[in-house]
Length: 203
Length: 322
Image (cartoon, rainbow over the protein chains, first blue to last red):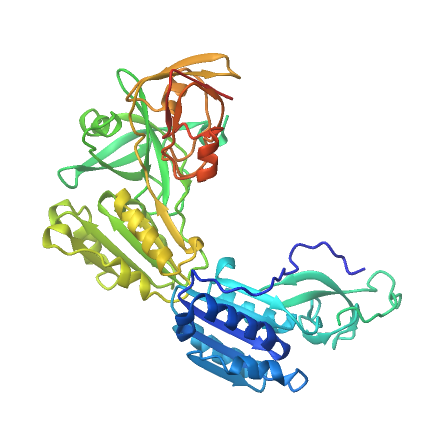
């Protein structure tokens, strides 16, 4: 029902420092603190002076273990900016990217929906695949774009979700980088009311 | 065999301008009338010249506006010593001469999603940018052209460019000891910039090395190098599929020798960059001399592949799967 095997679903990998970059921008959310702390440690070991050209953006999540956040706060980076919510971080990051120079590498760690929003900014700045790295951690809850009314539904954990427009949508693996969301398609278009069982699948 | 050059277009030279002592500018119109095929800035054509001894096929960038298809314009630098092509264009071609051209191919296209374009031209390398500037003027994307020539007298199109877009264009002349500072130029570009370089081999190498050292990803670095096929020793090549033996003269490329034997081998750029003419080597009783920028070091070392447009062999007999 999910219609899997779709190639647009993003692929993630553990973060590793890219020493070919001259500047490093790291962005994390909640539990993303752990991979960022590990990444900063690896970078400091491989190229100690690189931290002087490293900046970190981070969204505090009260639900995430705080010990990890403390770990990367101790790193001596050029700048650490923390935020209470995603939107202010995205606005601040966009302003910083506008001033950033070629040679910058972007690293993202956090829940997939958050990474999608950061990646969308990366695409707006025409960052290529070899300039961006992403590591998924935390919830797999999805941002879903209703292809009928074009509303976006946040934090979807189920295979079927009701949109504000009244339609029931099946959440596909078809991912739009431009919208930073998975596509939701009306599930009972042929036989109104005939819907598969709703299950929690994106945990 | 390859659709890109299955058909050539007969054209007539309707104007020739001597732009600098070494550069001639040609205007080509289709003999059949009407419009020539549409193209985008950065495209090149192959001009087929029917010489007395043999044919020449040289790539030249289209310089004219992609919006005006009644004619194409190209510039030809006289190379000294010439393998024949540039000398033919300078000495044999007159207004009224008829030539054949292959359809345009673009291996040096502007990146559509770039936030800024940085164009670096050296000498005759200005030609693809002349057409791209037409495309760039139609967008809101920032761009800069840095154009280096030996002296003001060698700077084809300097005056034209400087008068059209003084804000966006910087000229450099070796004679004034004024050189492009690639290091500081590439170090200060905003995220999302693409750099394009066309010029002498040394300039291209310096830009590629500098960009890499400054952390530019390869996907944002574009270059075009039309290396003339290096000359060398004569050798024989056996085309296994066709069952034809060809003799490659010292001043002739392997591709040219194959074509002269009547075999329609694939090609696009004729400069060792596009990879289209990649051919399997079945056997060689000597050494392959790779001159292309396409095959990886491993592929070159394997001895199993060759790009006949620029590469040759130091051997008596080379057997190709062609």
